[in-house]
Amino acid sequence: MTRGDGAERSAEERRASSRVIVDPDRCTGHGRCYTLAPDVYDADDVGHCRLLVEEVSGELEARAAIGEQNCPEQAITVSRQV
Image 1 (spheres, helix red, strand yellow):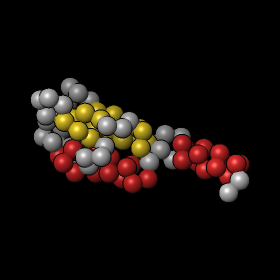
Image 2 (cartoon, helix red, strand yellow):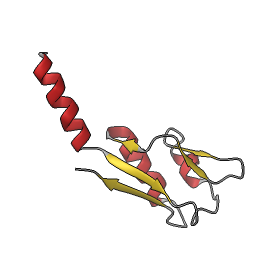
Image 3 (cartoon, rainbow, N blue to C red):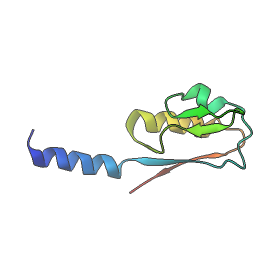
Image 4 (tube, helix red, strand yellow):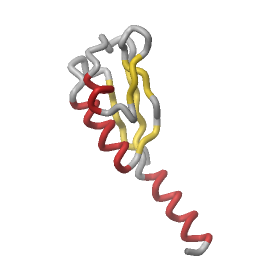
């Protein structure tokens, strides 16, 4: 692998990442997100969602999306970054 290949891959990975956002006003602490994706989400002292990572790609992106899809309060947003 040449140095240019590594830089190109890094730029490609950045383009393919997503940002995870949790609305603390909507989260009521059901815990589905951190139960289903403990490598992306965690619980704070009262059981509300706390992010472990804000930018995800690949497998973490898929896991973040599972947390988003299973949040009954729709407090999680996973948005694709360009």
